[in-house]
Length: 107
Image 1 (tube, rainbow, N blue to C red):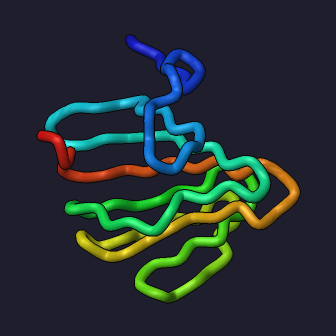
Image 2: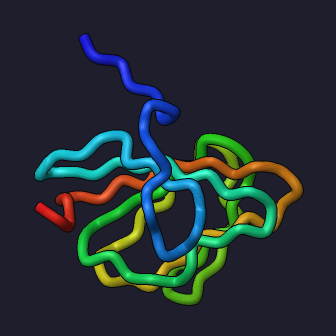
């Protein structure tokens, strides 16, 4: 059996300048863990595939197509393909969440 921790993976280059680690990738899915320090933002962008965000720690401010919600730990937020979305950490603590994209946009 394989076990995986996010710390096993390097921080991926990304246009947001935040801690993104791609912890599971195959042709069907990409699972990434993102950590946002206070004030950090995943800038508005669109994914070509279905995605969802699952908050592991803290409270994130999620915006999808102009709709804004606070998402606390153990909250799942789906996002349809080509919907403009961003995630911000407006708190004083760390926000950590998973992003799952399916299918893998890179095949």
